Image 1 (cartoon, rainbow, N blue to C red):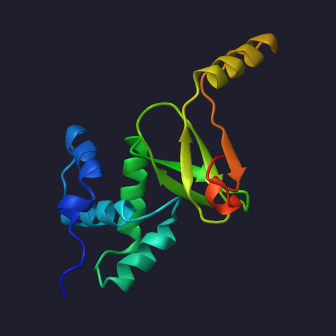
Image 2 (tube, rainbow, N blue to C red):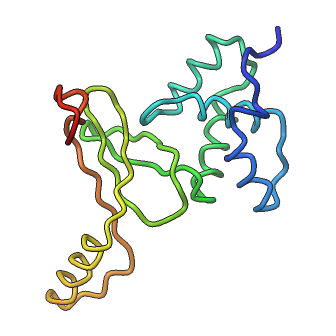
Length: 151
């Protein structure tokens, strides 16, 4: 049975990133990109494998893991560490940002804040430290799960 998703449409941004980096857009990569594009919020490799099985899509866990690793290297997705100690992935824009993750609905919001970056650099400087990179992940409940229209 053919997959019920259209990887040419659903995973186009990820496939474009692969193409620009010189990687072949193989059918398994197209299928994984389409599975990722259908996710809302953060997702795990197990979530993608479950979605593949449910849609009768013939891709294995190893293919999913290899594709996730490649997309991570290309900064098309980013690995996040959950409060439970598990890790998941989120689709991202390739600009420096942080994540706010809803622990109830799993929605993930990218936070791009120049003032935050400046404060981090200043805190590092005061500590006599030169920060080469940083990552911040906020966990809590989004405005929708809190029952309010604004955060």
